[in-house]
Image (cartoon, rainbow, N blue to C red; front, side, top):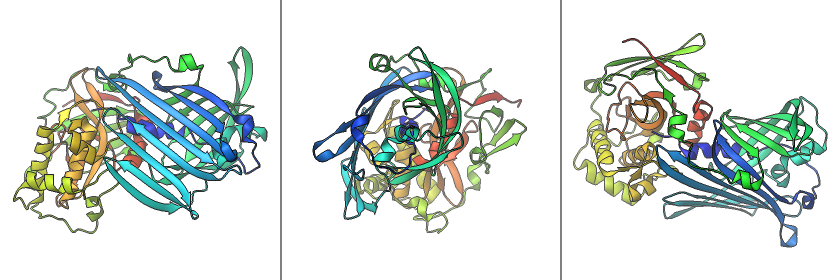
Length: 478
């Protein structure tokens, strides 16, 4: 179980968007660098540098470099994210270079404007994939968002739109920012007026609150109410230790241990926190029902005898798309196909194949907490990681033989380091009906302590960001 940095990156992306109107820009007045401390629920987890510089021919370079450092159940982790956006002298986007380096791998994206479209090259797991996408609307003014907007002396209620192409999602984000108020803070010993700006992004279901001076200086950005970027002197921004254990600090610790959590037939919990309608999953195994300001969770163990016999590859049109490869699940790769055929041998029944794949992943993966942007092919090569890596590999192998599978996220109960519910990832597969499978714990049918609050790819799991560290759980009576 873990809080994945790949999801937290999304909050980092959101912190870098804003809004302003079209106008002629003199970028030389904005050159220089700024440093920010990065905080997760008040615990420091990294730092970031932003810089604007001018190149030959008047080109403008906007650079962001972020470093995440954290303790994950006693294991020190580090991940670096860098982005270089290049604009022409007149403000048009020329290129984007995006790099993510973690303990096991490097993922690179290069986007280049060519012939009125965007050529995107992605390098991941030793493969290079090329795509052509529509020309983004993003311009230099979107990188200088608040500086330009504040020059216009906006008023409370003013609203503007900006654009940001995000290579990680392979699409452009549309951002709507609204000034929702003003306040005064002490900054550098001087009482300073700040604009409070709320930004919403079209596809991420996240909100960013920014506090900006009248000169356009961002003092603080808060994404999803849990991830904060705060302006700091360079020495203070880079001063970070590994004392913040993100697993424990963001878990829902319970007041009493749960007896026999893996063998139980039934479980009732009372949940409190900012759960929304899209987090309330109800199916054969679990129910989450709102009762006033609290939520009642109940779960029962699924009987394996109720799973139908079904041969694969599965051709059901309603679920077939979940058997297709994706950017982070390279189920069509020869190594993925070769491996899964060796695992299932002569099996033709989908449920039997799922059980074999689940057991193989558990047996062949080394469990370690990892701060990384993961993909299934890299996991197959390294065979190491936490619940995210286990689940991605399971989904990749399952799709490789035509069984639809998806990633699932939520919480699971464990006794250590402290009894409580920790953020976790597992999978769901279609074997005539959707069932939840947890390869990390070698559970072809997950136990009743799994609380599902999100499912799908990384964009869908972004919806969990506002919940990290903000859910409380009370164990109900048997």
